[in-house]
Each structure stands twice: as C-alpha cells, then as structure tokens.
Length: 74
Image: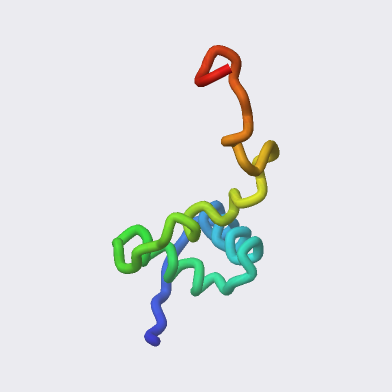
C-alpha cells in the first residue's frame, strides 16, 4: 500500500478517531472503507449495512403470530 497525507480539521479528526475506536479498527481502515463506500468500489450486503441495528428492536420474534383487530380472519 501507498501512504497518503491528508489535512483535516479537528472535527473530522475526532470523528475519525471515534469511529475507529468504536469499530475496533485502525483509522486507515476506516478511511479506506469510507472511500470504498463513497466511490462505489465495494458492494456491501444489507447485513453489513445494518449490523449495528441487529438486536436493537424488542418484540415478538415471529410477527406472524400477532393478531391485529379488524385485519384478517377473527
């Protein structure tokens, strides 16, 4: 890989550091991923795009068992 130098303001640097720490990856890996996503270099699956949401919703695991009054057969 080659090295690239960027000039970023403090706000962007802090956001980059926060994202790298939260994801457990290096700042360089975060930047590479952002470039790939923005420039369309790599397609991400729906799961990859929403994996941070997995498990964040409560309720019945099988919503087909929920009965709504006035809908379907009673």
